[in-house]
Amino acid sequence: MFGGINPKQMQGMMKKMGIAQEEVDAKKVLIEKKDGVTITVKNPSVLKVKVQGQTSFQISGEIEESAGEIEVSEEDIKTIVEKTGCSEKEAKKTLEKTKDLAEAILELSS
Image 1 (spheres, rainbow, N blue to C red):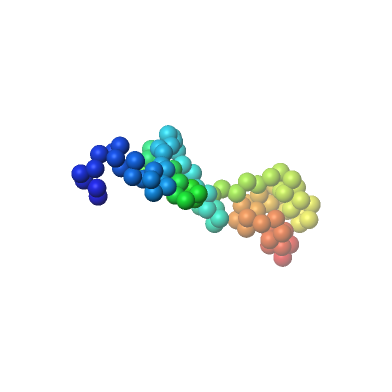
Image 2: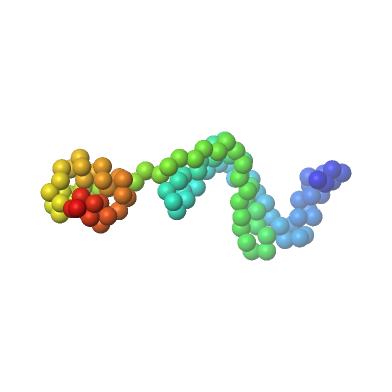
């Protein structure tokens, strides 16, 4: 992009424009999306960039996506068993499927 400029000159120009960047020594980057999907970036190259008071990150590397796993608490399972009379195994399976305590109780009650 700027073929004839050496890196030190580039850094100086960026500093004058109010742009600061630093490399982050990261082993792995995890992004947990609201829909439960986790994006993992292995062997990442991470650059932290500050421009006019705003900080952003530029990340590149090997990307893997995986569906998030719901954490099923023993307390939730006991609540479902008490309210529906089903087995603990059935309660856990339904809670993992619905991902919601109230919805699991409703499904097992019908």
